Length: 189
Image (cartoon, rainbow, N blue to C red; front, side):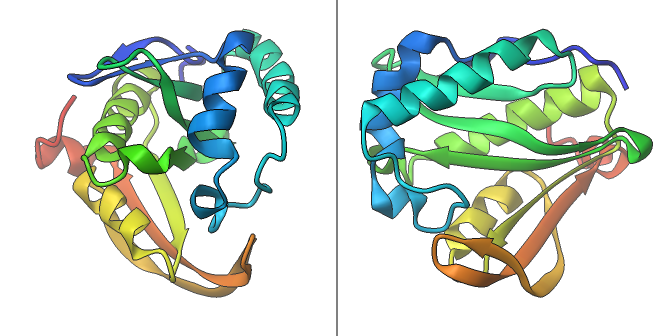
């Protein structure tokens, strides 16, 4: 595994880059303050921009660690940070990562999250050298699962009441991609 950290990635409609402290206002306004966005997440809705600033003050110093992967999703159209995508668990012994992501409601349904997830997966497989990239969603949030499938992940199964989010205990539906299968299917690298 290559500990290359969070590097700038570009897609047709997005710039994926490390967060900076000045992103707090976009983070708060575009997604972190919206209870509809945070409904199925594991962290509470931000009640003020100060909470977003505090979160970023924790994240930004971690970029010095080559094993930290957390991208701000910047819209090429308007220059705003509209969401984030990150490795929430990295297992070096198996070269595997579990992903998490969220995005402002105004940007849902436009294919932006699968676009971001594909770019990050290509980076994690091709540059970092991971073997497996996985993600899960609450069974009551199937749209998140469609994002995973559009990005090339395959459904693996359901872990009953294995997770806890802002709705309480939940069934986790897992999806994953393996590097060799992903390359053979030509998703992107």
